[in-house]
Image 1 (tube, one colour):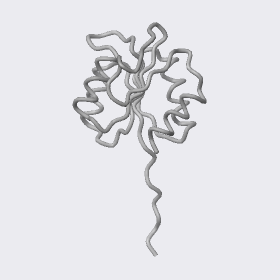
Image 2 (cartoon, one colour):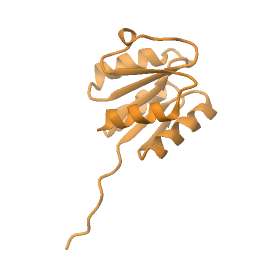
Image 3 (cartoon, rainbow, N blue to C red):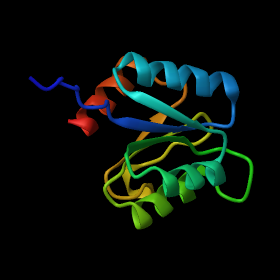
Length: 125
């Protein structure tokens, strides 16, 4: 009898420059039953994505320092890694689905944990 190894949980990359917000997002992802990897900005996120083909979803804030905000990051992900699902959040902007790459979902901060968890589970199904 071989030992059964359960499949690894899907991996979600959380991109948020604000440490407390990032910690809360990671907690939400892990509470929903997924593994979270953290990035403090878009450049960090791209480096992680280049090394980790197992990332299934990117959860990114729009408003971040550096040359690339979360919308540019989402567009790059859709172009370079088309299968990855996208959740984009912002406390400053309101977006329509037409502002986002294909299959991207937008949430305003403060977001409702249960609504976000439901969206993640739907995208991971």
